[in-house]
Amino acid sequence: MGNFYDLIVYQKAFDLAMKIFDASKLFPSDEKYGLANQIRRSSRSVCANIAEAYKRRKYKNYFISKLNDVECENAETQVWLDFAFNCTYISPTKYQELTDENNEIGKLIWFMLNNSEKFL
Image 1 (cartoon, one colour):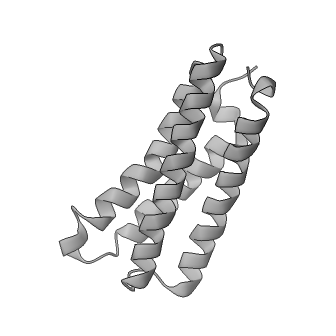
Image 2 (cartoon, rainbow, N blue to C red):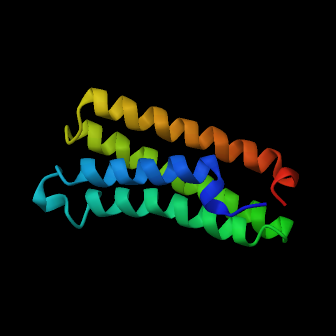
Image 3 (cartoon, rainbow, N blue to C red):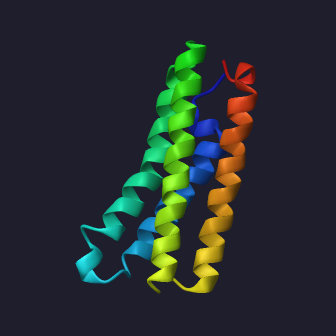
């Protein structure tokens, strides 16, 4: 059944985390341990929790619980994107691009939650 690297949701989440990392390099230096750190951590956590959920998928309840964590981290990433945009650290175009990707990841997570048996 492959591994988590084969999951489209993992690939998209990893790609988004890297785009967020690149975008956050342009944040003001006083945000290094603030917003930049928070948005990097939450976007990376989406990937890490997908991997952890997938590795433990033989335990349905654990798998679903971890996917709920993924959904929460994805929502947190959106909040930090909102802050980055409202603080004018990212352009409207970049904000829309990252938000669209984040929403797509959210839909894939939701699909996994509602069709967990396909992944067990």
